[in-house]
Amino acid sequence: MMNKSSHYFARGNTARGAHFLYRQAFQGLNKIFVLSGPQGTGKSTVIRSLSDSLLEKGQHVQCFHSPLRPAELDGIIATDLKIGVVDGRVCEGITGNESCEIVHVDFEEPLDNSRFTPDHASTIKELQSKLDGAYAKAYETFLTALRIHDEWEKYYIENMDFEKADQVTQGLIRDLFAGHESDTPTIGRHMFFGAATPKGAFDYIQSLTAQLERRIFIKGRPGSGKSTLLKKLAAAAEKKGLEVQVFHCGFDPNSLDMLIFPELSTAIFDSTAPHEYFPDRNGDEILDMYPLTITSGTDEAYAAEIAAIKDRYSVKMKEATACLAQAEAIDSQLKAIYAGATDFSKVEEIRTQLASKLKELVSQ
Image 1 (tube, rainbow, N blue to C red):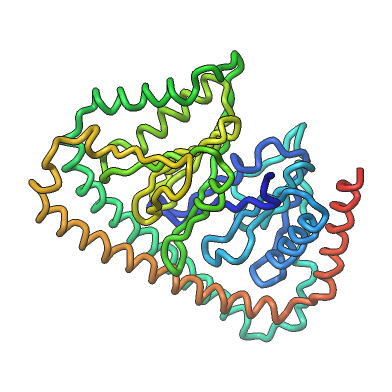
Image 2: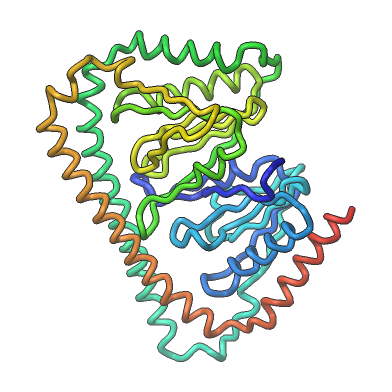
């Protein structure tokens, strides 16, 4: 039996800056409600209420969480209805077309300008500047951490047997896809299973894979070919016509961390820190890239150098996380200002209208 809700991220605070996957995550929908307005005007609360209402009616809901506050929702998809609702501030890349209608919902209308004091405009401008600065510092520090991580990977890349790595990949392609080929290629759906948050790395791997029959836990060192393997598997699945969910790394979105093949009831994912898990049930297995592809003794040969790199990497990751915590605190101040000027009775009217539209679609 399928869970009533699935949980993801479609934006991330990464070493490549703010990264958005909403265009890919929301592909194939018939209608998307885009809620426009500043933070603090009730958008996330309304999205959560709509999600709860759909779940109560037995609908499956895909929940897209905020990387700044994972308990809050940036958007939802009513899976069977093919309807999305998303905060317009975070859905970069979403556009309408002949098959998908975009409906804009104005959350600036409930703002009561008479509740703003003369000082509010300058305070908002100052806080927004500080918020932009905190994010910029976080992204800069994550990028520094990524460069350090590249140093870490170099020791293993230089000691990798690329022929063996390709043999592992080709073996997996045969193992996973044999007998499931189609003449019609597919396009993978791209999302994040986790995010860098003000409290550190956070992920939904366990809930996303809980009902799958097979889970392959990829182990290995940085640079041992985990992401490359996943990219080749994803490309092969698309070519062979299999549905594939492609999950990018929340630290470096150019890398992949997990694939889910719904038709095969199978997931394969990078199970190393900061999302390290171990088999705990039937159908779980480990694929360790280190002994399969890396020269024996590499860990020992470069132990001192790698330990020093790990320490520098850890320091930078903690610094970047602290910057995100600062961003969250500043954003909370902005939310409080806008919330104080919002007429929430009007927000409730908007919520009621949206709920009514969704209810009509459910009953059809």
